Length: 388
Image (cartoon, rainbow, N blue to C red):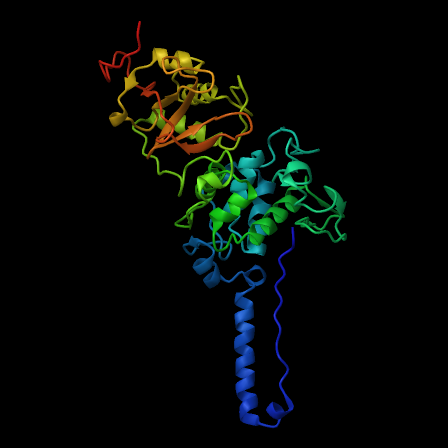
């Protein structure tokens, strides 16, 4: 990875220019204009509110840190040291701190997970630290140099000694957050946040998860604008969603609680048989989501399909479950399930190697839908009730 390099050059005035006062005056004016344009090209150094609002894909003037969103009540869930560095680095590099916080949340729950690679070593793909920056293997060495190396050492990567310590340490929150900011800048985050986040992790569901948290952490009217994401077929295994995360209008408080629980798991890994808190399988995720809402449902997708009231596709609402035959199931006994959140989208724990994500279900040939939150005895579709 090459570091971004911004350099402005000015042309020396010729001898003829020096002998002509009027030309010299115009030359000075032109030089000032060039310098002004040069400053606009380096928002990382000056943090201009005007440039940020027009070009960074963000809108809204906020109180607090200049050019940055205020924090919402949700932001208080971020550990204090992480919140400090997200905001400091965001202001320093001209990157919305909420995007950095979104990445940190999805990658490591802001350093609170004990998954491999977060606090030492690397994960199976060669990513390390709370921001999961590549240090080798399939992820490549985006960090540059060793995971922990002297801060004075120049490397071809995003490694940074942000907190002034002796080392550039990928496991150090301050250094890792600054490295992530530099990575996003290299991929044009100020002009197109979605594409830069997609470059960070080639899953559209990952982009949506990060943008969801970025929006949740932002206070006031500040919003991150999501441009169209890259086509789903550009990277194998991408979810088929596009645009920003669905605005959810849950029909009941229980549904709101279930969806909120599932959203909090976005970005965590899939694990067959998993019921949290660090990893889930598909049915484990929806079971625990509804348990958080005070509703007990069966453990497996097959049992959930067999025991819950079914819903015609024309009547589906947020909170319903959507079922698929899956690799280990059939149409009559579906092996995969997701939690509907609206607009043809669901939250699902898809498969090994995929983080819990937001994805479309409309083009996946769903078997059908159930409503675990329906009141006992409710008949939703007399022609489609579970047998027996």
